[in-house]
Image (cartoon, rainbow, N blue to C red):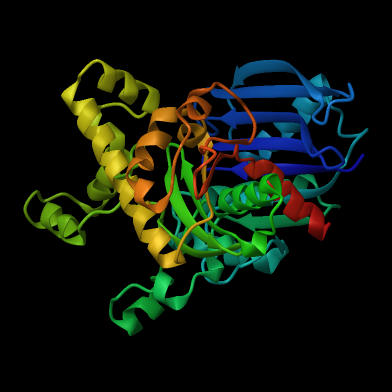
Length: 407
């Protein structure tokens, strides 16, 4: 059995998953939260697979939790090792052949999975100026993991890498060129690992060549983005230099007139930090309706609440705007896929997002869309000119695949 350890490290968290690459299923995973705070939380899940002849093995979960203070990422690594030792699977019996690291921002430097050495580590740290909320945590996790697993290759997989195929017209902002170059200002795009995985799974499900498909992928979670994928290549995406641009999200505003920032600074006298906090953490669905979870928003809509209804309408308005724009950029579309928490579970969001595309032959089957189901599935009607799919994303597996390919 060949296994890959996938690590997603934040400033105060460390998420990990041990993936059996023969079956492409997790055998153990966990989350360590509140690192450096008074009381950290640890959850470790063992996933035992039983080969019962089905294409996908049955999964039996055994979850263990604990609470203690964990001072830094090095100690978090030690806690992770202890969880594997106490609860399994034992790393001595299935040592990882590689460690894959999720890194949010690769700038314009990284366009593929990359073996990590000291120089690459420095480069990732240098890119923290573009992702101050994300890359420093990734670097802390990488350093701790390289010390812990010093005898196996470590691979960085960048959220931005899939979008390095954006043409200049798509990634260039119309500001003075020297300023943009000096400060590395351009559209980078995010959720690339998910968009890559979903677009490839869609082609596989439809049994059609990826290179022949024009696709829209809606990754709708607390963070949300849409990508136009032409022949397996990202050609347009909604997130920009940072994950703030684009769709309405749980706590992020998405697209907004840049002059609003100047207005808030000049008239409301908000500091840069306060504006950053407002647009990234206090806006979106939370700012409009006081709630982040789409299930709560939909419940409010059903109850006739004006704030929830407005939030939902703004959310859908932005989805439709991007759908239309990206179909125009692609010159047509063959497949539209929904993924992530909202995209996979909110049937009404999917239906409303595409409701105005009937002129283009886009038709959802109401029963298929509403049916409770898991796994990849078709929700378009038989007479739809476009395939509409729900495709559960698996960023950990995609990271594991890319890391395994370099091991």
